[in-house]
Length: 412
Image 1 (spheres, one colour):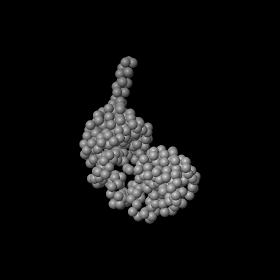
Image 2: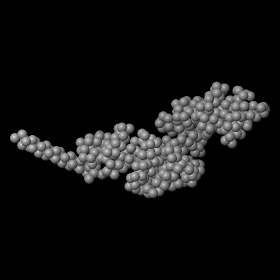
Image 3: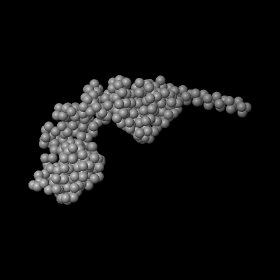
Image 4: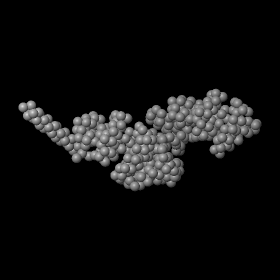
């Protein structure tokens, strides 16, 4: 009897991917006299500092009306729009600030942040570089350009170079260690990632994101107890951290503590009921408990939220196969392979389903595809498949011979 399915690959961990360093601060240059424009500007700075963004926008607009050449007013109004999430208006104000004063580095820097938030890393890189041309000691610009190189270009060497330069300028910049750690993690250099996350935590012990990311690195090394400890500490600092619940749940799942894993994934779903990954992970935990009905429900919900979720199709197919529903299993494996023709395990698991349907030719074809993808099938399954196939062929020949003899007698 072959094994019902190969081991699963569970895409689970949530990393706090970006820590944009040095969020823009309102600029307040010295002014010799308190004109009406200046008083409006000062009110805007106070409102922005107090997170009263609509009031800040109104005050900076008044300041601009009274003094259309006040570059800082455009810049700060752009910052108010950025914090509200109105990126298009923020971009317009930062661009106008640059028009008024093309040598104003903060506007390039903050426009770069907005482009990065919009996923336009090419323009973000251009703006960060211009900010650094104007101000070579701009540590925040080095950090954020490093983030753009990492996320947008996957140019990890340049990202590291920028983080290193930021640390030359400020050796105690926690954000630089945090983001350099993330780049090392992307490079799968977990030891250096751990060292940087630990340094970031020593500089800023209240940063939940650093604990979350260090927990991910520990999990990747198989140190699940430390991964759980870091996620727990992150939750102490940030009680509603979705990432911490998801990652701790995955660590518990990998330890075989499915009950605690399900509790964490369920809590994560109360925070965000529309995250396909969390339904998938909880489904994997239910599958670990052999609660196939609930596993199917969660995998199906993951697919509803993300119809291109390859692993959800593959895992639901495994559950169907475990339940003996081979037609549905084959349909799910086929869908997973349509989305990702390089999904080796889907070929193997579909081969198992074909085996139980006694379609040995198709089973053999899928095993061959699995092997071409570098997979190593269970030797017992191969032996069982060969034996069953040979037996079926012998039976088919015997039936053919019997039919031929019967036809000959009838002819006589």
